[in-house]
Amino acid sequence: MCPANSARGATRQPRIRTLVVDDEPLARDLMSSLVRRDAGLELVGTAASGSEALAAVASYDPQLLLLDIQMPSLDGISVAEQLATRDVPPYIIFVTAHDSYALQAFEVAVRDYLVKPVSKRHFAAAIRRARQRIGGVAVDVAEPLIVRSGDALVSLLPDDIVWVAAANQYVRLHTNGRGEYMLSQSLRQFSRGLSNKTFLRIHRSTLINKNHVTGVLSSDGRYRAEMTDGNILDVARNRRAVISELLACSRANN
Image 1 (tube, one colour):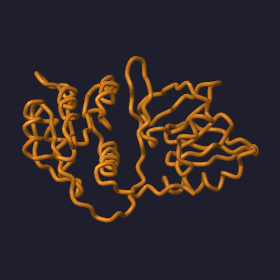
Image 2: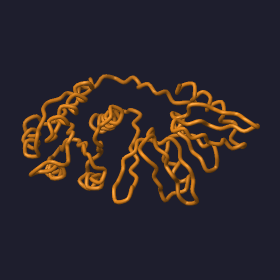
Image 3: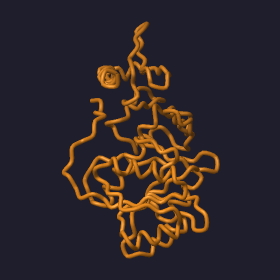
Image 4: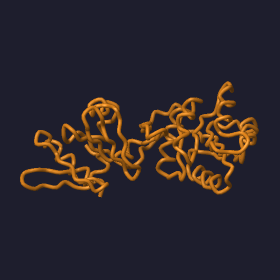
């Protein structure tokens, strides 16, 4: 069955006290606007520097911190390190213009990070993960996949991945506008960490994201799946049982 794209209903929880920290006024305003639009968040304050952030945490006791990394004097990494010593540190989401900071983020126990410019979709996904950790709410949360790109680490959500191709003991991830990435895993190993509700094996060397199927083509007795990135992928003859599911997904996605 093709997964529904609509949000699931949930019991209303107390709003999460949220602090936005960024030294750039425009970025601070944009992030604050995203917070205000989320009915589950309460914007308790903003800060324009690392020292202001520490003072604001002491004053407002936020549960969630949206923290810029690159700031003069006291940067976001240093702020996170100091806050980690609190009895109950806030849940921190780093907001950065550079993926290369991801490794440092996870070294100081930061749970998540967003790359500027922050999209509404990635913001919403990060907040869902934060809400689960902060409130213990049982929700279906898409965990990010951290992949290496050169010397940088890149955070991908499952829905960023359009399809996955096997290449011997490697897999190549084809994403929705975020480039391609190689991982040193077999397709079987990689698929173990993915939800069967979202991903479907259509060939021994191909795994697809059901949310990115736009059509099913048939010619000469062969079937192919048309994807949102424009690729048309063969469905193996021994996988024809998935055709009805692919058709349902294409209808849901169009």
